[in-house]
Length: 277
Image (cartoon, rainbow, N blue to C red; front, side, top):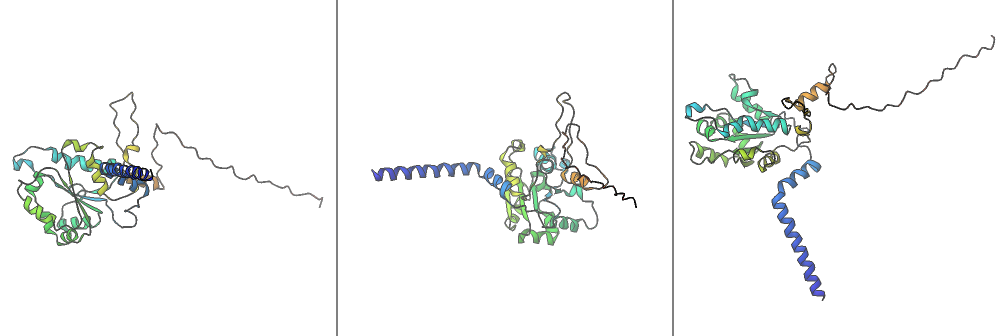
């Protein structure tokens, strides 16, 4: 009888362990992100870096390649930076947008990478065929950062690149990067915010305490469906709110918050006593 009870107890324990293991394999990203969001430390505190990520992708002249605009190009130029900045609140450095070409262009690129917590490299067939890895071979300091692990690299592959020119060069240099995470973008279905792709990207990005933009958007009135809402970046809002000469912008649909302050203490005035002197 005792052996039967012991065997039954062990069976239940093994069953629970199997269920927990299966759940972890299916939802490991969600579990990790939830734990990091509630109990993790803020990686961005006191690291003296300005950007959460350096987005390495340059628009390719598709006409010279005999191709039209592709889903990969749209993802790299529009969707990826838009979601990371406006939805998740990360601050990105994008060379084509944030850097003015000059005689010190390569040095400025390397300096911007040094000020970034992550290096995000987007590999599309057009980019690999046109550029390869040449931009990272020009600057010695930048190449040194990759091979020594001074910066974590997130590489997003947007298609099967095995038959693309220059891919062997890229594949060989992958092995020289010390801290590298490779994420597969699997077409337009990966653009959905609920997809596993974005969970992988956010997991590899710096852990920081932030409020997603979806919670900060102003509600669009139902009686005017054509009205659009443009959210203000988090940094801009903080700059405005901290400026002594500007009041934060008011929201017509926001409920005013009343702060309760105790009334000042009543002062009793004593009249001088007239003793007839």
